Every structure is written in C-alpha cells, then in structure tokens.
Length: 147
Ligand code: AMP
Image 1 (cartoon, helix red, strand yellow):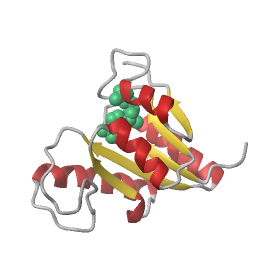
Image 2 (cartoon, protein in one colour):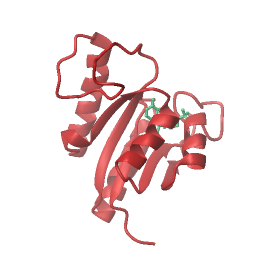
Image 3 (spheres, protein in one colour):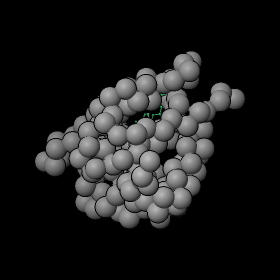
Image 4 (tube, helix red, strand yellow):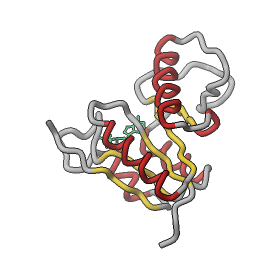
C-alpha cells in the first residue's frame, strides 16, 4: 500500500472526538500527508450567503452560532497546524458532504469516529457507516468506547 497523501479528518465535536483527532494527526505525521479538517453544519439553518453551501472562513458573518462553530474549527486547525485553506465548514448532511469533499479535494484517507453525536447506541454510527460504504477512498473508523 502506498503512503497516504491527503487525509481528511471529520469532526463533530462530540465528547470523545479527541481520540479521533489524535489519530488523524499521528497518521498525517507518519505519512507526511496533507491534513484537512471538516465540520458539517447539520443543525444550523442555512442563511442565504450567496456563496452556496460552502462557507468562506475568511469572510465576516453575522451569525452567532456560525461564529461559534467557526471558532471551534479555527481553534482545532491552529492546534493541528492545518492551513486555513484546508479547514472546511459545510452545510448539509454529514455523510454526503464528507464524501463529496473527499472526492473534490482528492483525499485518499478519511478519518472518522466509530460513532459520534448520531450513533451512541450503535456499534457504528450512521455517518461512519455511510462514509465507510460509499466513500471512494480508504476510510479509517476510530473505535470509540462509550464511557
Ligand atoms: P455518527 O456516525 O454520526 O455517530 O458519527 C461518527 C463520526 O462521523 C464522528 O465521530 C465524526 O468523525 C463524523 N461526523 C459525524 N457528524 C459529523 C459532522 N456534523 N461533521 C463532521 N463529521 C461528522
């Protein structure tokens, strides 16, 4: 298997996301790969931004919730040393947007948690399950144990 060149970390800010973040960072270092991060806004109504469903993180926005989400992503990006151009905030359904972004950005490994906000009762959450089934690249689901 060749080295990964572009790893996409999908974050939902659920309680146990730290394990997933650490693993993605380790993998990016090990493979000297570009690391991108994505958070999909699935619980905030979409305003008419004029930019479509992708939110330009370098533009001002008057939406407080949006600003809070943006701040979290920026903080994580800074923590991981991810360039601003590789930090993505997208409106939509997480499974669809993660897969679409991975194709658009020619990602060769997607890293997700085995479950997050949507899948606590499941062995594999619904987002993780769909990404595993439908992504065209490799997917690593980091096994998260319920506390
Ligand atoms: P789930 O299958 O929804 O329980 O979540 C499993 C994993 O999918 C999480 O640990 C994240 O890695 C990813 N994920 C879920 N929801 C989102 C989201 N809104 N944005 C980005 N990644 C997500």
